[in-house]
Image 1: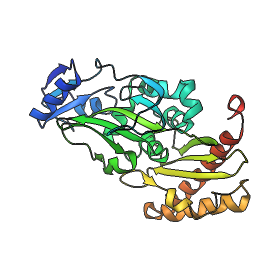
Image 2: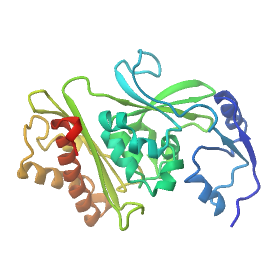
Image 3: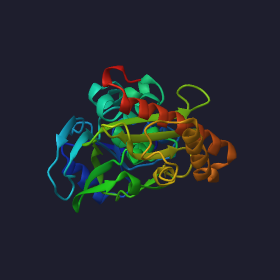
Length: 301
């Protein structure tokens, strides 16, 4: 099939793009197009106009100490422009060092051709419940900076995804960047593990984990989220708070079995098999994240 008739605008500024979205409820933003173009071809999406934001310079990546303010945290963050491609997340050494959960998640998205075009902002806005990056961002306690006719605002990733392919974004808002807080005390580690029937397929389930370890080797915090379990990423942070990871200096078999059982129970609504799979993936992600937090960066796997 071919897309229904539509208009096309290569936006020259964020303000111009917002203005079009505000004036036309059926306008759609296009970035990498890896989700939108197939929907257009199947006529599952019928926008009146496509607003192309590829020329707006939203592809920067940096680590900054951001000043306090309406849309800015007051601690070091990894700043990812909305048009940072999946492939860059997968290969960038800075991301691998400070946010390995995103490195893992990006490497699992589709195939290289998709990762070369797909963008972090597009994945976030599309809000596919099986997608890796939304769950990874929830696990990383990330936030998203958006802008619309009422100005910029920052939304926590945990509050952004509201349902099946649904977000808290207003119709006139555009994602500008993603911000991931960095560890300021001790060392951090992260990992994302999933299982798919074939490499590149949508995963049946995936789990992202981020943890920190004190200089003395004691786990000081852990957060996690699952993809493919519900209509939106499922936070596992509260569930894992009860298993004894925080305060542990080693990952015993007993502790890992408790992680698996707790995650399985937290994901029981997705069915017994998928809950069991999520528990297994969570233990793998915890082991990998802990190894990264306790191993010198050059040799961490």
